[in-house]
Length: 424
Image (cartoon, rainbow, N blue to C red):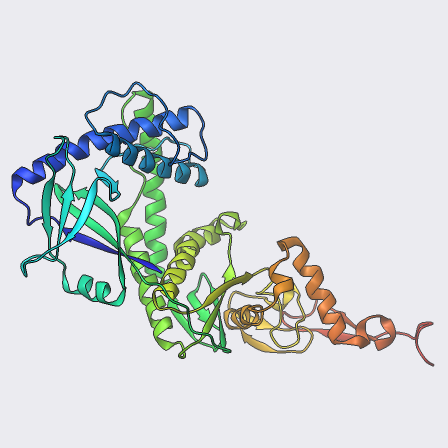
């Protein structure tokens, strides 16, 4: 398990050292941008950051080690660009250095004034600079909880100030437990658990901010089209304020859920592919973007790893339509966003809670978790029929029939005339 210690200020260094860091960052960013452009121009979708750097006409004052560092950072940017299926080539706007131990070394401090020193190689060969770093209280607590400090360091410049990011790691087996809690991610409640708890709400304020951010994004897209015709740089489409507001709400809900989990509990998560989720209604698509299901999923996994809680991603297909009591699966079981009523056994529950209970049952279901999405419905139907041998064929004399004039949530059972397979 790894965790980042962010926002470590480099304001204790003298101006001369920071000027050398500024010069290094500018040259490093130029080389990274050139490597990114070369990889995209040659359509290298999976660049190997450990391979030899291709011969390019990029005159630079960077050392060979710094050029290798820039190449590795460019490979990561291009991989992410292709995986996210972006269209506009990436443009590096803020200085960022993802350094390894060949160019930046973390040295412990022997004085109480500082916690560590960063020995950074500069453009002047053989003349590195040492920049002191002082941890804040939360960073010291994190360092005490994690046993190992990784050698990689990320340096970022924001508003003229430099910040460092350290990575710490903790290794060890996660505790075993027989109790499983299922977690369902939703667009009304951020997370719902199989024990009936729901945490966080996609509030009206969040939806309003998302709609306002979408309108602002559309205006920026039109502006970028004009700027492109004039050969001018495009403006960023991101809305940091709306995104920060949403992620703050998500983090608060996840922390509350994890605090309420019983000790040594395993967690079952639904295996989501958010990029494939689409609704016919534009309003529902806006609600989907407001809920940020992909971010919730990734953040929850990170927090579970941080706390040493064992979890598993399970097959989520038809979990919102399957009854957690009898296993009957039908789309009409869930007739609204909040209500679930099984049309076979009559079980009623909150829809998200029922889905979380189904997800918890699938934690150890190796057969179902190995199936692709399209085959899950057939397997669920066969399992339901095996549980109730009387409905394998007509002899049970019962049939589930849902006419069009029946109110929502109502099921009608008709008795059929005898057939050749029935007695009497």
